[in-house]
Amino acid sequence: MKIEYKTPALIQQLILWEREFSREVEYLETPMGLFLGIDFNEKDGYFCTPVDSFSFASTGVDGIHFALLTEFGFVKDLEEAPVLRVSPMDSDRVRLIARNLHDFLSLHLFDELALLNEYSSEEDYRESVRKNDAQDLNSEWFDHDRWKREKQKVLNEVRDRFNLTPILNPVQYMQEIRLERSIHLTTVTEDSLGIMAPSSEALERVEFLASIRNLQHNCSSNRGIIERHANELIKMGMTHEAESLLVRLLR
Image (tube, rainbow, N blue to C red; front, side):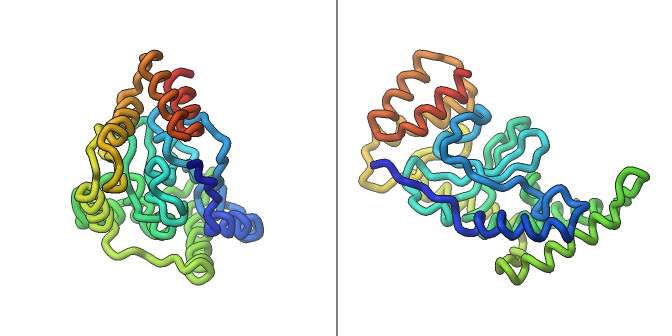
């Protein structure tokens, strides 16, 4: 059965708020530091962006974007969908970074470096933050001090308006949600995401969905295999996923 997904209310509220608040932080490209929005009709995307996900934010740099994972329809409400970082230029192109949208936004606002990079420990991350904060990037072209003041103004505003507060130990948080996911996976895949499915799901179907993840991870260009997978997805009622697979791997 096809699920009619809706843009999470939190994203809608943030977009509306940004339109008004952007006047107060004109030095920032966007108040949130992201380009927000979901196009449910969009099929195009990077080869590695999971076909069972919806991109909702991008950094505007190196193709890095963030997506809400539907688990091939297992997740019904995008407010509660796991959040992925998709970084096409990296070897670990797709990584789980937040349990849900609310957690993602808290991490993005208060611990952005933890979202964009992989750290082995909390200490490693804190050292990176210290080095980053110590940088003086002021120049005749860039007023770093003003940029920092306006970023702080955004933090002060969203903290209360959207109930977004720092997550204690962000690196540990990400390690824990990844471990939690690995324990509950029905089957593993090469992109580290694996497949989450109800216990009643047929093993054959689970393995088929896993093979789609592997096709994307390896940037397959085998037209015959890709088209067969797309046709099977259509039979399963996953037309959007099928069309996305064709466009992302065969364009």
